[in-house]
Length: 184
Image (cartoon, rainbow, N blue to C red):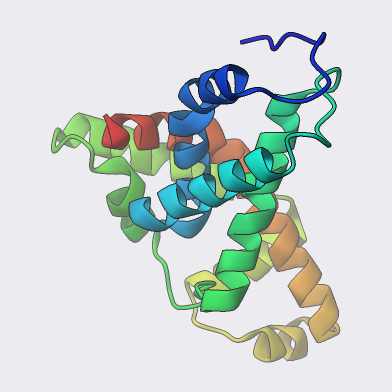
């Protein structure tokens, strides 16, 4: 969807078109972060409210799509921080598969999903993989990992952050498709 660039501000018709074009995709995107359909919808609604409130300041010559995705991303991070949704409890590969891969009870689909998750974990760089496994599968806290690895807690945090970012990127298309199926 391309918006007309001749307007100085976003008009009602363009706004409605923008909403219809991106709402479902933005909800799916937000859902990858907050893991809750209602919260994801609320976040996207809030973003669109802000877009409407700031419609006079939006430069239609720039990518509105990028602006929307960035806004949703930032609001999701704020939501996670404010609601303390970042969960460091044990998550096994089977739990991840059940969370994202059980759209269909077909065992073949389930085993393919588990294989994709395991492959993504196996492809992590050495230190990231080691820190991720120690934290998620061996129940070790960052401090304990730091002591065992003879590194600082900040280094462990950095490696864990890097591992999670890589996994999110590796599995994003896979997770995004599954979320779309769940929304429809």
